Image (cartoon, rainbow, N blue to C red; front, side, top):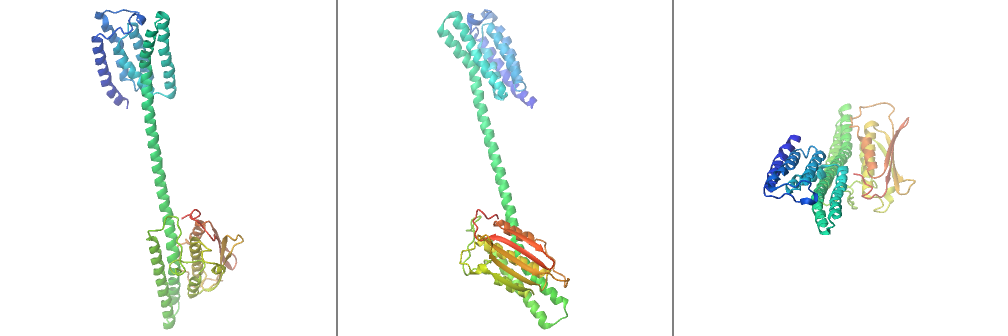
Amino acid sequence: MDNTNLRRDAPTAAITLVCGLLLIGLGLTGVWGSQIGLVQLTDDERWWFAIPLTVSCVALVFKRRAPVTTLLIGFVALAGDSLLGGSIATFLPFFDLLYTAALIGSPRVRRALWIISGGLVAAPMIYVLADTADLRLTVLIGMQQGLLFNAPLWWAMDVRRKTELAEVAAARADAVERLSLASRQQAVRQERDSLARDLHDVVASHLSAIALHSGGALATPPAEAKDRAALAQVRRSALESMEDMRTMIALLRTPDVEPGAEATPTPDDDAAFPRLTHLQPLADQARANGLTVTVDNQLAQLPEGSVSAASELAGYRIVQEALTNAAKHAPYAEVSVQVIKDRDPANASITIRNTLPAAAGTDSPPGLGLGLTSMRERAAAIGGHLTAVATADHWTVTAVLPLLTSPATVNP
């Protein structure tokens, strides 16, 4: 990096030196005359001004590596030039050195430069005014000194401010992009979790029923009537699974549902939109799977719209998964399903309790081990909660769900 800066600044220093020598050759020296210069040089001696010019131009080569040090060297050269009577040539490199120090220096350096430049403007004005009492000359000296010392600082501050604003804008854009990416990734994760729950809830219960009936038929001696009944139930479960998959795919393809918005079922939409207030299809399927099911659904008597679509679907899927688990792990068990208003009338309480088998009979079909996780996630997604407890002879699943939800409370 330093070598790159040296290669970039060396041509600038060389060009500045050539321009300065040209100005000296044109006789633009002795600008301070006898007011400041201690040495009066003749035209033939004006090339002495090339010494401070050369020193300043050499400092230009290293201005980025050591901006404060090179500025001090340039200031000493400018002071020596002024003692010779002053030349415009030495102003050129000093202007660049002061600009660079203000541009890349620390805030402390910049504050010091402003204070020193103010003193360097005021001191010559006071000296000239006290020595000559010429107000016109004093103002002229002040303008010259202000142009020499303040203009580079103002220019550097303006460039630095614009650079910092550009950096802040770039950092803000980068932060917005990172937040947008994180938001998209979170949305993808949430959508994957939602799809996983839906696939599990929609397909697992039917596949479990198929496994139970086919396993039961294979575990007993052949009997045409019994085997045909088992095949009929297998076919029924397969068709129901296909219908549920078709419904889910249709919902996923619906283009006019906003994110976080709820689908509102119609009275004739029970097949396409499962309802907590309509659990009869689940009870019938569970009985066909060999369970003895009793249902006490007090929400079925509520007016239309008393339960939000999100709660209807979540509650239905929780009951469905609980019955599926009972059929897999406690075949032919007695199951009670109770859906009532909770102690908090804004919530519904769902309790599914099944007896546990005394001893293992036929092997249970293997599951994915995601049932309880899926039920808990469904309850939590709409602001509810779920517990599952085993006692000596019963397995109980209890869910508490809000009757009404809003898009703000739904966590997909």
